[in-house]
Image (tube, rainbow, N blue to C red; front, top):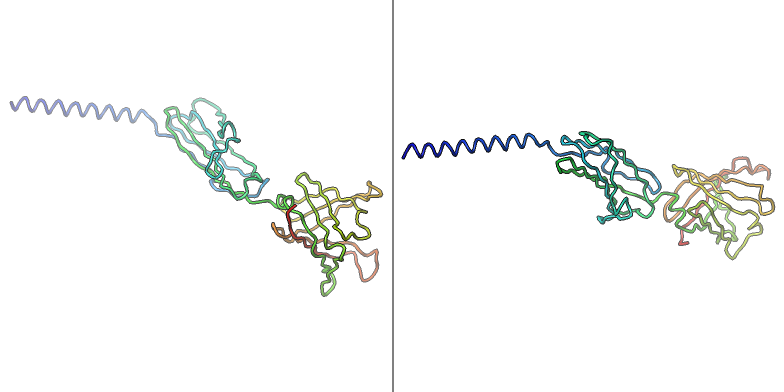
Length: 271
């Protein structure tokens, strides 16, 4: 009886050893799953700007696919790619490492929204890995300018000491509209000044660093006579625009010089 019992335990132990060895070999034969790394996983910028992140995938079991899906406020954005997902073109069928340069232009309608891009890697064995890039978008200066009507509130002549307010009564209801397409319009209100309408305003630009604003006008009597006004932006928010311009007024004689500085202040209102 003892011999039979010992033999039975021997068989069980041998079977366990064989199964353990088999499982160990199976585990060794299946490579580890992929990993996804981003050079940046949280980026901030302004509408119209381009953000980028380098995606690096390591796949010991060979990379089978890499997809990018987009979410806005935790909901899938079906306008991105195909039904919210974009498939990255791989350069080969047996890839243990892969690098992808992801770029995205921040959208005006995504200001102050939670935007995420999920990168999902799948290897040849069906193992997966994911990484999320978060994109934070604030309104650009150009977007702010194009969103509101800008009402002239002050024309401060800062060259004299002390500063002198030069806005006239007929200018106090002047307002400017800057359109997204670069065109502009001026409304002179009900108290038109004598020379209102002599200059026809045509367009505007804001430099990439949002420090220089220009607006262009032509003479109503001679359209070939074009003038570009260049301002230094001192402050730009959704409520107020403050800009400085230097003018050559020496033609008017003393006390005016070729470097007379004026600070214009505008308040925002709905278009």
